Length: 155
Image 1 (cartoon, one colour):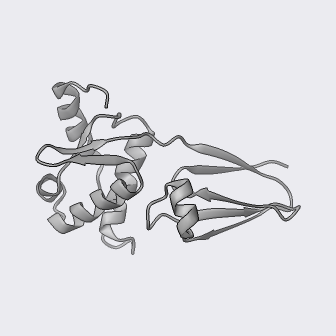
Image 2: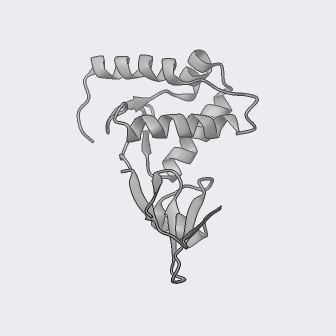
């Protein structure tokens, strides 16, 4: 784990608190919103490897969410390999997934579904992150984690 200064951790905590906006009317589960927001902050470099993420109690205090909701978000991020928890110390960013750019060509089709167990492990998606399945014009099937995949159209 790389070293992150206490000042950076405080700045990141304040940044995280400002960025988190829970939309209770969206239909998306609150803990999944938290996972998505924190995952995006990790991918964008706002929370570097080694940075501490808020605890369930901090999420309750800062964002007004139930401690169990915060714990569910942390568990989902842990399953996806994004964070590690050190008992009695806190939960820290463990990895930064890279965004993956995938080109679509004429005749390609894209669907989204939940991953198989094998895909979940191979793509490190966690249990609730869907996969994008691209069926190429030639019939080849390619699954990608929806969490980090950006699709572009090539004509």
